[in-house]
Amino acid sequence: MRWKRFVASVLYALNGIRLAVCHERNMRIHLVATVAVIVAAAMFRISKMEWLVLLLTIGAVMSLEIVNSAIERAVDLVTDEYRPLAKEAKDLAAGAVLVFAFISVIIGLSIFLPYLYVFFKNSLHFHK
Image (tube, rainbow, N blue to C red; front, side, top):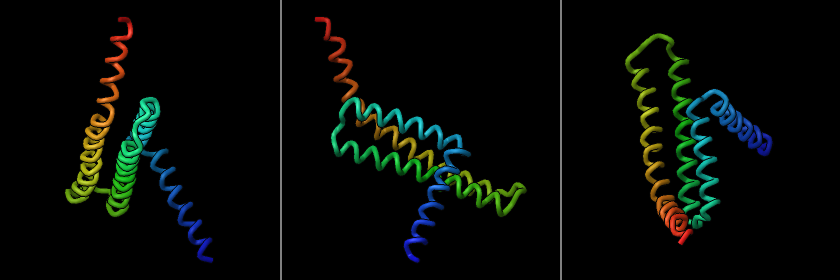
């Protein structure tokens, strides 16, 4: 019986991810960015530690986006009229995503800039 409950909870969670991807524009933007980052990471053959940092960063951004969507839906469930506290709750959740998205860009730049520097340096000196 425990196994069935576990499987059911995993299915509910997967449905939550599906809902986020299907209904949240920002989640789709994060997915496109994720694919681009993974392709670049594979192309540059980044280190194992850099992979781990990237995967944690990707997971955190996507998780925050899903939590933000959940908070927005919960607020919308409670009230359909404008309330300043409801707006603040939504803004705060969106702000959390924005903060970590900004941090993730800094993390990505710190990982990829050295690889890009070497790539372009080698490309420019290729004809000598």
